[in-house]
Image (cartoon, rainbow, N blue to C red; front, side):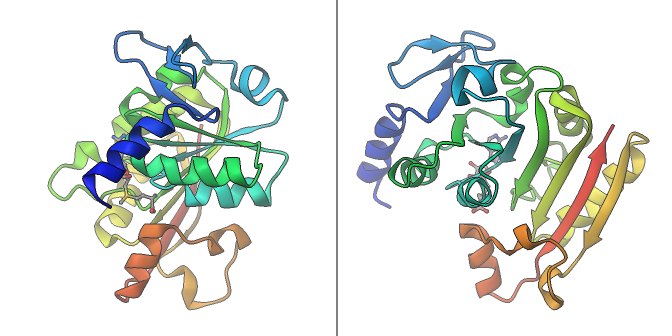
Length: 228
Ligand SMILES: C[S@@+](CC[C@H](N)C(=O)[O-])C[C@H]1O[C@@H](n2cnc3c(N)ncnc32)[C@H](O)[C@@H]1O
């Protein structure tokens, strides 16, 4: 995508009614489509979605492929895709608007600040799809212990985490972190999910990066675990 197009999307995405952006100077405040500050912490379901359905997050959502696909699968759940790149979020947010998928929103922020925008017990499940493995920088990995602590602060007790990755490094690293955390329990793990019929139908959805990885012959791995 050209730089001009990226900038256009970046500006346009801020005007979408299903996109919120973090305001660096104001802790838990978000900017809505009118450029006004809004505090949705603890209030996403009733304040934005206008229902009391469970909240699921997709972290590092990129173009929001999984967020939109899961929202279609589960219309009685609310899905929020989180990423720092507005020009990528633009794709998923635009698709949701054009297809009238109302149980989808996007949050543009760094995931390091995720607990500023969700209250304790507000989130039911978290998907992390094809995050960067950050070779040589373990603390930046979205399954490192500091990140699990952030998720613990917003998840309901027994909240479920899903990690889908092509990276053997991140897969092994995540296993180690989960094993070292006495409050985490692995429910399911598979280092080649497409080698046999899928155990969970929702794993069939493929993101932009997943398709790229499959195209060069990489195998897809999945861990499902509970954080208490
Ligand atoms: C490899 S891409 C995967 C995107 C998408 N999940 C997919 O599979 O197509 C990783 C994404 O994570 C986002 N990201 C990485 N670290 C982040 C952070 N700390 N906070 C917010 N977004 C982050 C990047 O902007 C990028 O869009």
